[in-house]
Image (cartoon, rainbow, N blue to C red; front, side):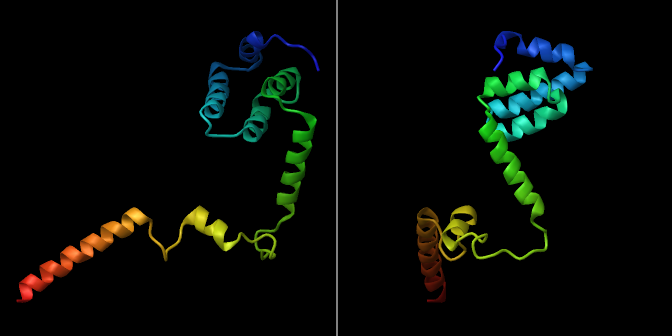
Length: 135
């Protein structure tokens, strides 16, 4: 690995990019990463459009702690995803379990405890109101 001066990374990127707008788009991408809207994999992949595969990209990977093992695993995953056809049915191993689906999307059968309590109290109020009107 080459030792770069990390404090000079952004000035070097600014000098290397064509225009001020392009540099601002690059900074927006970095900002999305620092605010945890995108992960490190997405940042590295999207920064390639700005930095290419040159010296600045090597420095960015070094700053992020990106190594060759990560690169190989990401490339293997992308290759695997590209081979899956959109209309291909999922195999048993590809399908998420019922518990995973409930965690991800919730269940239509069970309401959270605070909502159940609210509906229970609400139905009691409605029942009392209806009984008073009919008598």
